[in-house]
Amino acid sequence: MRVLVIGGTEFVSVHLVRALLRDGHQVVVTNRGRRPERLPAGVGAIVCDRTDHAALRAKLAAERVDALVDVTYAPTTGADVEAVLEALAGRLGHALFVSTGRVHDHSLPIPYREDTPRSLYWGEYAKNKIAGEDALMRWHGARGLPVTIVRPTHVYGPLNTRNNETFVFDRLVRGRPILVPGAGGWLRQFGHVEDLADAIVAMLGVPAAFGQAYNVTGEEAITQVGFVELIADVIKRPLTLVHVDTPPGGGTVPFGQNLVYDCHSVYTTTKVRRELGIRPRYTLAAGLAQTFEWYLSLGLDRREIDFSAEDDHLR
Ligand SMILES: NC(=O)c1ccc[n+]([C@@H]2O[C@H](COP(=O)([O-])OP(=O)(O)OC[C@H]3O[C@@H](n4cnc5c(N)ncnc54)[C@H](OP(=O)(O)O)[C@@H]3O)[C@@H](O)[C@H]2O)c1
Image 1 (cartoon, rainbow, N blue to C red):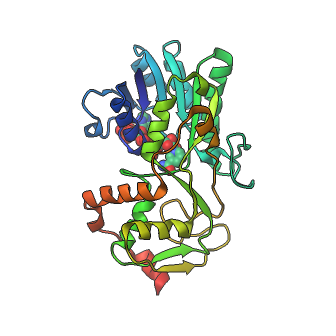
Image 2 (image 1 turned 135 degrees about the horizontal axis):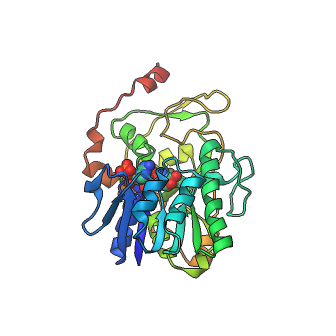
Image 3 (image 1 turned 60 degrees about the horizontal axis):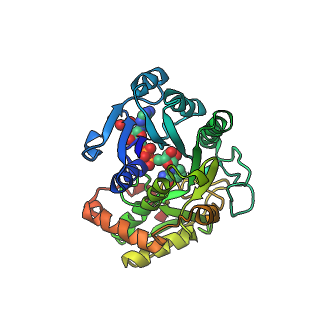
């Protein structure tokens, strides 16, 4: 297949490009061209800011693709998603949109299924992702375009741009304590980035996936404390936990880039497994071990980090 990826040079989309090439697909990416060195040989690059719809139309005018994977959040609005579909109208086989588990209404009891009502619980991010999903579904309903929505949750793995697992690595390799917001009992669910990329590739051009949305993440839900304990276990470092009270509504306790918030986030993965036969390769422990190897291979364990905010809590 010839596949157009919006993005291609950061975390999720880098792994997606690699997975597509591995499976013999022809890949073209659209991004602003800030990290061209990240593109493997043979990948076509269309340099364009996706928020400039006129430029996008001009740059994609000659493109004909079997599939589009819209990965980048720029922050991407419904109109931005629609603009890509317009720019490829009549020359696109299947559109896949990377949304988020955060479209689900997190005030409802867990776990969240694909048909759990969506809401603006997660504010502007949810609003934009819901609008992107709706744009896709409109094109599916009114114009018959094959579309698929993928909803990942906390994605982890090599090249992660969110400082979550690396946040814990950084402290444990230095023998530092880990501050825990409150009781640290909110459930999280992590998905390995290679599993996400593989799932997306496996859906492309698959009629059973047309018009569908899928939660795509790992099989294990784990508390905030459990996540830290598992990492300590996997990388074989002693662990000291220091609980810090958070003000109601969440707080400023340093604990990974986006893992502090005060609610559970747990999602069913049954639909993608049962309907498409897609399941993750990595358990959370295996994925963390692989990510730690990558972290060490880049010497990230020796990087400079400012711990002063945490030291204030520890005094
Ligand atoms: N990470 C998670 O835990 C998580 C969870 C749920 C959902 N998601 C979703 O997963 C997706 C992947 O996110 P990611 O953080 O891995 O990043 P990504 O989209 O894979 O990487 C960003 C890419 O987009 C390009 N880009 C950025 N702004 C652009 C613009 N205005 N126009 C064109 N290209 C642009 C960047 O290149 P240039 O800078 O050169 O333009 C880069 O190639 C997002 O949609 C996110 O909402 C992530």
